[in-house]
Image (tube, rainbow, N blue to C red; front, side, top):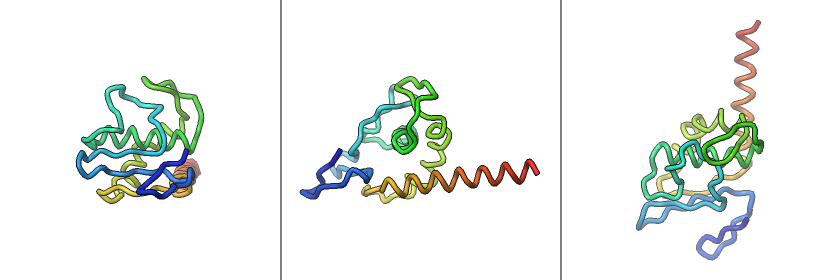
Length: 127
């Protein structure tokens, strides 16, 4: 899974988001395989919150594989489903308008940190 960007190879360890200046759409080096809404495609010229949520869900489904939850399109892990909206707010909405690269390690580290914080919060409430 290697995408070419202006003649340069992008390693498969990167999620690639490239914006087309003419149409405003973006492309990735992975396919949309899950979605909570079949009418939304993340290969769209209009980048709505629904598109970002679909993109987030697909990214997290790659980082945290599993098939516990049946969606209108595909299946994904409980962890991917539970974190995708927060991922939009914390990560995707902070990316530059022109797009950019989002390393796999950044996504994984973000999710692990969020998960650890949730466990700590739960432990404090239970004590």
